[in-house]
Amino acid sequence: MTEQKRIMEIIELWKADKKQYVKKSSYSAYMLLIENHLSPAFGNMYNVEESDVQEFVFRKLEEGLSQKTIKDILIVLKMILKFGVKIKLIEYQQFSIQFPTEREKHEIEVLSKINQKKIMNYVQEHFTFKNLGIYICLSAGIRIGEICALTWEDIDTDTGIIYIRKTIQRIYVVEDGNRHTELILDTPKTKNSIRDIPMSRDLLKMLKPIKKIVNSSFFVLTNDAKSTEPRTYRNYYKKLMNELKIPELKFHGLRHSFAT
Image 1 (tube, rainbow, N blue to C red):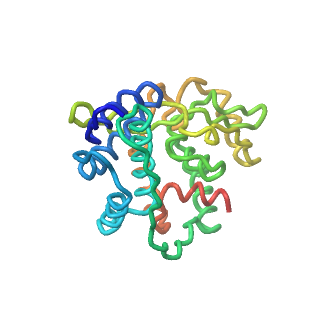
Image 2: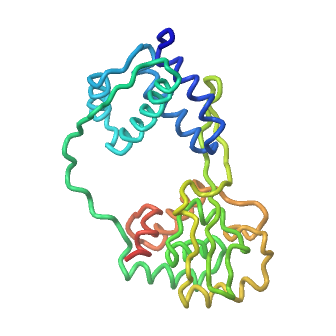
Image 3: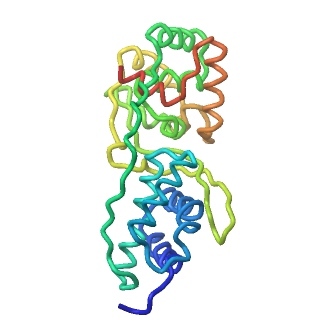
């Protein structure tokens, strides 16, 4: 094994290597986890023991991080350490990290059938392209980044299929210690997110006449060449739910409501 390096030095080598292969959004997410959690905890160490990682886990739980977030952080840590082993800068260590038993999970929040109907009726009576987007999400189980990226060419009213091939998200970019945000349009993160969604009869009936008169390259939510971003659309959705006096439900709840 070559001269031992601090974990921070291995992190820098791993970052340079990883940047060549992963999406900008994934790389950005890695950088945030490293800057906020891994570098402060392990950066100055020369070797990471199981006890160090276990202590880190308990500390992050006390700080209020969810088990899922901590597990995501550990995935990045393991990638970095395995890279260090691969380039012969550290020795391999097998970890067995313990998590407290999770409390009973909350039930997934969904819209009641009455409130689903209220939204559907409102959209039909007060047509705007933004309202149409909410109708599509509720009818087809589309995520907020996907509806923001949806263009009319993704909607085939002849076959009755919506093609999900892209998503919009605002990412935090960390470069040379400086942070800024960027709005990016990209393919979905996982292969399972690239999918073809059959439209319901009601949705197809609504979209068919609109599709005939719109520019196929325009975004559905704006009916324009310029898109809207998820944060802006989420705020619009909250405002609409408040106007309809529907109990607060995260936008993702529309997707869960579709599945019920």
